[in-house]
Length: 101
Image (tube, rainbow, N blue to C red; front, side, top):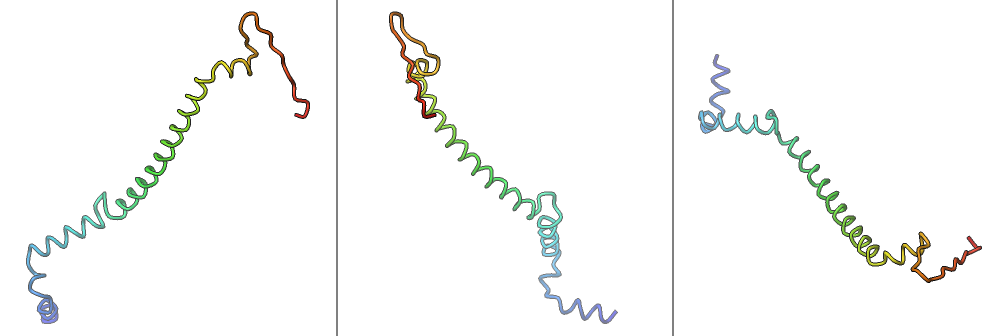
């Protein structure tokens, strides 16, 4: 019993305070035992960082595809004439084949 009293007497008085003990236990619980502990939070932060990078990549890709779509819509007549050999009435179409391909 005297050994226990010696150990207790070596602990600072502020650590024996019930509020300090409660605070230490609460912090321990939140950091290590809680469902959203510190390790889970770091994992979630890395997931958020990765998703933000993917989002910026997709935003850039959407902008590039919108530009391509606008270019296509502006040159629709040229596209139809070249790909589908369409022509206007009273207009002759000459097809030139490249033999090097």
